[in-house]
Length: 331
Image (cartoon, rainbow, N blue to C red; front, side, top):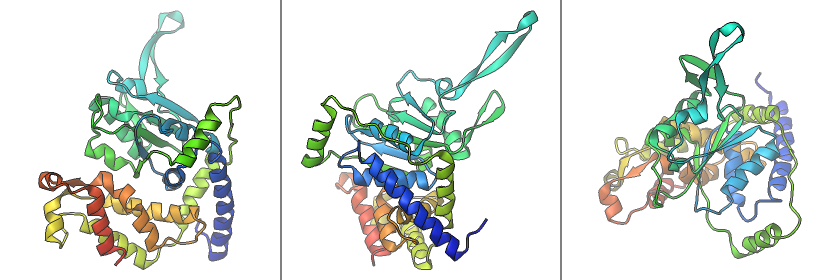
């Protein structure tokens, strides 16, 4: 049901209070990663999946576990390894003998049947196993032995990934990367955050977080995000940005030489949803151009690739996306 202006404002005010409590609770155990926490919450509010990229030991797993606990979601974790098989994630049918000697198949659910799946070190599994998540992430269901099986609602995947330069990793294919709403880079904490972390995690006391939401409330917030109005100026900026990143539609000869392939329509949809979610998380009723500018890199970086010549010249995706933002959004 569509909300009128007064109802929308009241709903946003209530959501702002709830989300402030959520961020405060997460801050009890995650130090110095405010932007990472904000992007992760933005991903969940927008109803999407997130890919967290960083070196081992930067609390990626801890962050996902904390999000699940604070939002009250049923969470399962899968450690991706080279020998992991699709059935280890999705589940499989087993042949059982019932009373009277009659045999029948029984489906045993895999860990994907949860509300928040943590795919730990997803790029350590083979491409075949990585592909097992494609249907689930897009359609919120899986097809096993010819039967469709609906996943719980809400359903989100938060995957962690080590840099592909490390040994024993398989780069995610483009189709899988496009399923992730955002790619979140996790850097080393600053010295003060690392000091707090060091002291808090080496003592005798452990900090427990309490649930601030439940899955029904999360789905209500996700519907609210889709109800937030977006101005024509923001819509036009998103379209200009995404289309300028495609070699086929870009009017900049230099960028055409640097970009091998650009973002598809999912990038436009992702920017619309995440801009709304970021505005709500910041306590605002409508997204602005600053939201588009801030979200351009995490939304676009895994949906674009540079040409060999550009990489040879030392050009980075961050530089290309920065140029696109300056010419289409910040101009």
